[in-house]
Length: 235
Image (cartoon, rainbow, N blue to C red; front, side, top):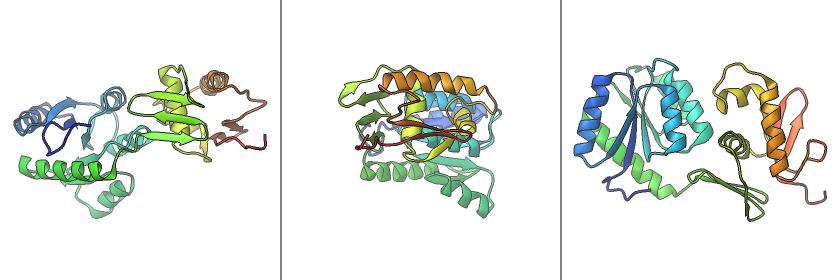
């Protein structure tokens, strides 16, 4: 991460209104932020995955997905701080978003000074909490920022989808993750063919040195989903 004061922190603005995006880019750039912007949920997820920013400003009224769903997806792949920008001012909705993983929120319309102050506060908290973009389960170590995975100290050569699948499961060790959830959060599809998941799990197992019949990390729970867990030392 860059040094914050909040100078040179990178901000991803997710906003479908081109005029608002332009204004935010201009005003935040003047305040020494490095600003990128996108207008859709899918572009936002792609940006966070490929080039993680230091903080995301997320509008809820996006054309392809509701921002609340985007927040849920973001939390499945990243711990990047998220500030919600919303015209929805009902308290239950705000509480729900904060409980779902938002770090802060702003009610539209807001001033650039207000946004800048919230950005600086969120970034300070992020620095104090330290990096949380690494996952370890047994001998499996995953660096989310670098998109690198190692098993027993040796690098794993994973495709992008294999990495995403492994990281999603490793972030939930011991929990059975439903196939529908994997399709939604890893493949970004509401519906799909279970065979797609099976094929990627088979490839992952091969690279982890295991099989479906003799699993170490990846355990299929028939009719439910998949669980990633630390290997049993007795096996």
